[in-house]
Image 1 (spheres, rainbow, N blue to C red):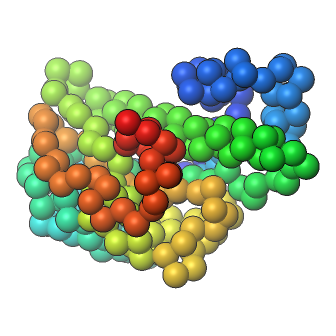
Image 2 (image 1 turned 180 degrees about the vertical axis):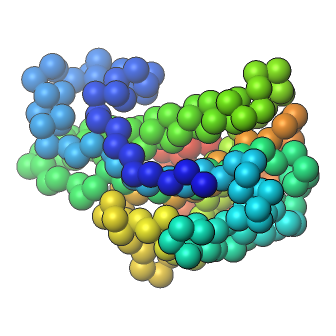
Length: 231
């Protein structure tokens, strides 16, 4: 199992289309002001691959996924409705992660708060995309470029039938407190944080369960959703 802390400086996010569009609306001076006060995205991840499956440190069975950090003597069994649709024989690699933008700075003008909020939301999404690419690279190194590999949509509390309280198990397994991420009654702190599980499989698998089937957010929040983006 590979486990490490990660940092994504905000300047790395400027290749994201949504951030590029946002920057076009702002002056270069305003962008520099945001970069000066907004913290970098940081987090922690644990990746399980072939050897972990062989030694039983990561197992998928029906709706449950077992993960073990042998070195730290920590483990977690996480449940998700959608996993029952995945053939465990297709499983190649699993990455669980937690990311945060840290505490949100305060601004005197409401428009600055809005743009900062959008910038951080897009930065979390882009950081997750970087992790997806890293997981694919790890899988390619182990299984070769000829394999038909796919990264499934990120599974996390509130999506695909995973209970919000599962985030507490993931944060405990990852030792999220080391990067400033804690939980309380299923809520992540700081608020601009996310936690989830990425799964790489051989071949393709269609997840029939809608990601928002159990979502408790209001429809006004859909434009910021990772899956729908306001569509």
